Image 1 (cartoon, rainbow, N blue to C red):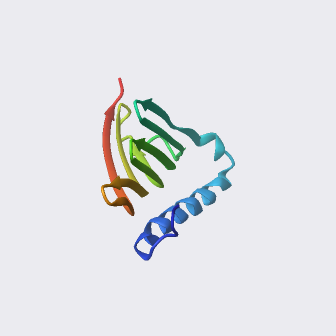
Image 2 (cartoon, rainbow, N blue to C red; image 1 turned 120 degrees about the vertical axis):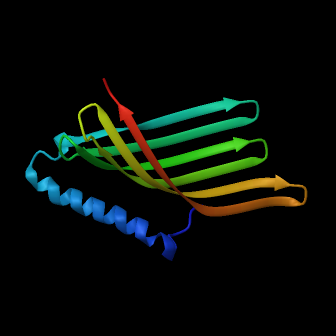
Image 3 (cartoon, helix red, strand yellow; image 1 turned 90 degrees about the vertical axis):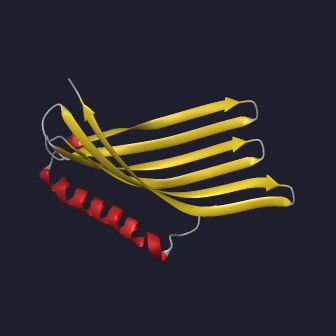
Length: 141
């Protein structure tokens, strides 16, 4: 289904690797696991000739009151009539609280997408990488 990483995706894999190495280095402080928060999402949808499943676990390390960083995984399956799509990948995320009620976030996600669909003369299939950068801001009262 999914192929190994190509040369243009090695920087993403190296970023994940160094994030994990940095995490292991800070684990020496003793209370590392108390600062890790787990979460994510789970989605399920269905209807007339439609089905959708999404699983996206994540883990975030709270480095201090202002900074947190983490990793996430994502898998999505979608089917609608003669169209099928699977996407799987990972993301790196960071959260920053410049002052207590304000939070800024950034997440880089890399997904490998595989699509198959029927056309009049057979079945088309394509596999490609889909990078995404999500930036956000929030306020908490």
